[in-house]
Length: 185
Image (cartoon, rainbow, N blue to C red; front, side, top):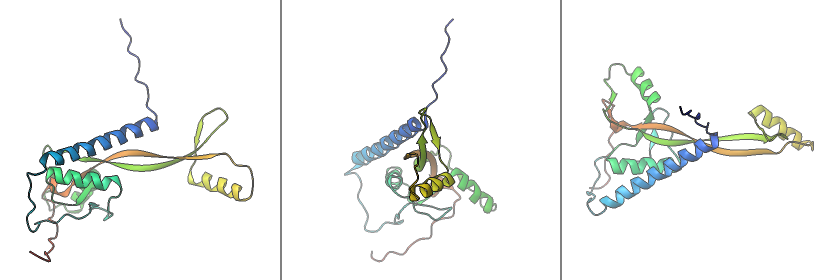
């Protein structure tokens, strides 16, 4: 009778590294898909639905960094002609705010995994264990440092956590984007 060993629990750093690798690989896959399609597509004189910078429809904030690249590449590869994105939870809130509209995510649709950075601040004790610091503790240490008192060595790391978003174009019954008039045809 064989005994199965319990799976080793991954650290926050290992999870963050895996998420980053998955993110980079998906961007590379999108770029390869675009390269394969090169030469087959011809841009019309005007675009019916001009793409802007991807933004969160629930908050109005634009996405930044590598998330912008991933969303724009995903839009190009999958033919999503909308720059409005939201998490599933934000979509549910929009549904709740507009009960008269019959909105649902199209069957078989997959969201796009993005990265949310989080800075962690910690000290390393004499025993080698990490003690995570909250904002109040960080301020106390900084105040002691300004007074010239001895303080522990504070370390900072940025970890990345995944979250998934859906494009407004992937949602049936979602209000259409206001059309912009073209300056030139």
